[in-house]
Amino acid sequence: MLSKLLGFILKVVLLIVIPFILLIRGAVYLHSSSNYLPWICILGGTLMAIIVLFVYLSFIHQLFVRGGGAMSIKTRMIISFITVLLYVIHGIFYLSGSNMKTESIRSEIRKVHPVLRLAVSTLIHLDKEIVITDSDRLPEDYKAMGLKSIKNSLHYRQSTGYSHALDLRTMNRPEWKNILVQNFFRVMGFRTLRHTGTADHLHVSLISHDRPHAK
Image (cartoon, rainbow, N blue to C red; front, side, top):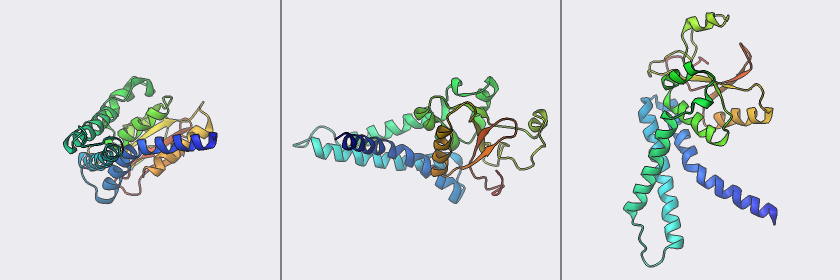
């Protein structure tokens, strides 16, 4: 009985998150396959999520509302549009300062590609203890950290106008959480590397068409 209940809950949760997973995965696919402008990729993923959410609402409407009901197609579309739009705006522009290692990272985070920001903010909904330890960099930043300067780092600003990488804290966290976080980004289409340069951390990046082999 318990296993059936847990299975049902898991299915419901999966159905709820699918539109938002599709939003991120769709945006990453558009960026990786066609190198569209960042906001075109976000728009494409947003439209995918709106369509799926509209289908959900239509199914619920058919299932529970009899005799015509009050929720018209237009109403369902408006609800879907507003829900996804608010999610995107909040995810891209309102990352909490408690999830940033320093105040300087908080000021730099908007220099990171919006698709990557959206993915991180989505993950933070599931894991409030996520901490971004680094984002936008300049070549001299590596020297300041006592490291050899990297020529093609995706922490640098790319032709999109954004940096394509950020680092997440892995120290003092259960290893199973670190593994789940790394696999989340891989499933979403991002590249991940476990680095131990200045401290153990997870490096997450979005492919740059300027430097396709850069990390």
